[in-house]
Image (cartoon, rainbow, N blue to C red; front, side, top):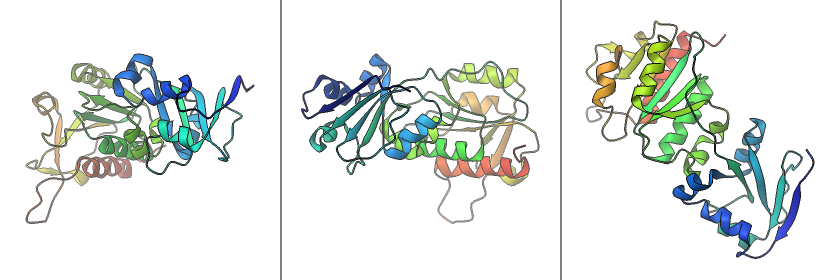
Length: 261
């Protein structure tokens, strides 16, 4: 790719710097349609997955492959500190166009789908995406999100997996319509379920549905679930697991019994 623009910036008041710094606010991200990706590993994973990276800011003396980047800005440490989200940045930050994250019309046969309703913690959101990508989920659906999908904390917690995972954001009704159309059974976790999760996933496809960190799943999914599974807990005080842990257990149990072909 031919480089379109290269510039060195030393002023924190530079218009490009001020614009990128404004993207730290979620309302600005959605107004502009752009978000930031910070970290060498995360930016490289975005590029490797053909994400629409528009520009990269590199702190002085930081080496980074620039052959796939349209616009490159070399900046001083003081300038980078203004646009950085992290306490100890590695000097690489990109700006990318925000994708639509719409639902597909069709799902493949033997699909593994994760649906997360009402999540609000960026760390949980990113960790769940990282797990889903690692286990080979065909689709991750987020409904009633209480945080921004492109929050820098989500990207960091996902370790860049967010760029390799198919993700859709929609309403509960839209998600249910897609699952029913593709005859994907819906499984939820419930402490009083009679079936343990390691004996539950006999179908060749499944949609594992997990809920809000504090309130669990809404009545909508409790009423529309085809299967309720229990994650056994032997402790005397624990009555629930972190949503990320519960998600990982269920996804990996399905993948153990239904290996990717």
